[in-house]
Image 1 (cartoon, rainbow, N blue to C red):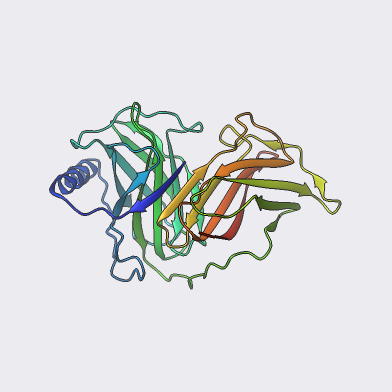
Image 2 (cartoon, one colour):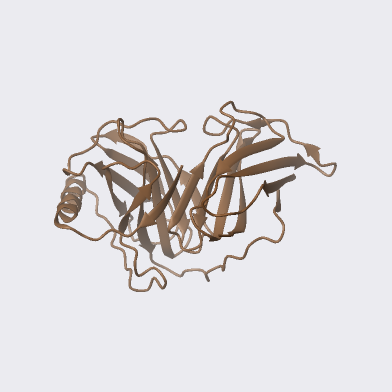
Length: 288
């Protein structure tokens, strides 16, 4: 699964769809926060909700609303996503994709914060989930879903959280692709790092001072693991699952992935052991 975000230009139909959505939310007692885009340096071309040219496209349009008491960090925020077709009618049926109807990725602008949650389907095209944002600043919500009988769709939305924002962390490619997570050592390897070409990506796991191979990984979303990669500018999103359809238990997890363009990407590998999920982040540079 991989997609590249492209800004959408507002049109009358889209405006009507958004207006209908907020009328629906008002009827339910919710209010959407507004997004101040004026201070988003380097992102002036992004719209509040941008569509995606995806490997498999659909006519679905996702409308996002975020309801928070004071729009401040660490408050519980209610996120609602309404999926409609091009005639502004709710899409009601969705395919299960990796055990869920929708995957929602939440990342900060500098990609230092990452969360992967699964909204609950309320019917009539509406998905709901609660989360909180750790600090002030800009966050991107990325929804991945597949309407039944249509193509997979990946769509995004920017939100602003008030309060003090931490200093942006500049993304620098890791010099060594080995990370320590608790008592586990996780190494990432590629057969090459060329943009626009399918490549092999393999995680290897050892544990303890003796670096014993890990053989008790548990299924995560129906497989040995899950990987999300996002480009430094936030415009490119890649979401993949292992090449082996059967959940293995380690000591390696193999994936195939395509990075759509050259540049810096941050990767998050998600795995599970002893009923606890662990996330391993890496920063890489992809060549042309």
